Length: 262
Ligand code: SF4
Image 1 (cartoon, rainbow, N blue to C red):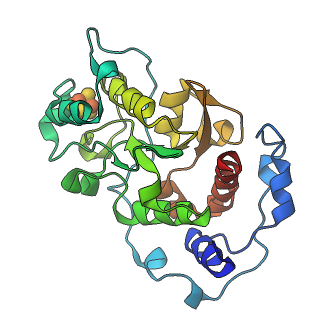
Image 2: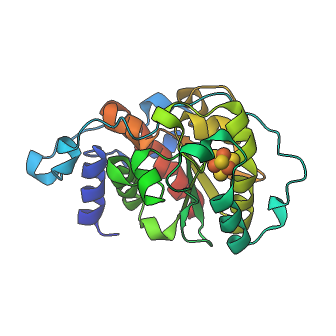
């Protein structure tokens, strides 16, 4: 990626500049040695260099960034672990395993490259995702695209999925029984994609995948894995839109992803 394009994506993320030596704060095994000090914003770009939608898009009430406790169980007799892509997407589309099926317009299966090196995992569909049947659309989706662009990846090059395939009403946190019922679908998607790296965005995704109750701020920057696949934890784009000060830390997480993919 050329320098101008990289700077554009960084500007979209709200990270105006970064200090390369700060990446050295991430140890040779990918473990953050000083996560709070790694990224610094040292130069402010002019307002014209930042795309207008960054400031103009309204609050993100329909986009998800929070959630509930994890659970590890899988529904009994579930054949999902043997399904291929077609069977899996059909089963998700017809799924009534939890109460969320009653209120959905569409299931949100997942999108992207089914042979991707990087898999991005979020929480659950918001209102717009429910309408369109695709994860990470709208303003948070635009920021996610910019975040991926900042490390040289287009949205179509990665695979994007959520912990839940149906929208919780009113964007409430997923309930344990819902994540429990839905987990086999994501497990199978991960097995089929077999990514080299997983990036979780937001608390729900990180807690469910890592079977942890820690906050994102405590999980990020640490070595973690799912079924032998390295997991990088970062903030949800919707949260970053509300809390731009954390974009520098998200950029640090993305650099860890880039380093693992090299
Ligand atoms: S959220 Fe998951 S388990 Fe619940 S109905 Fe939708 S696809 Fe099925």
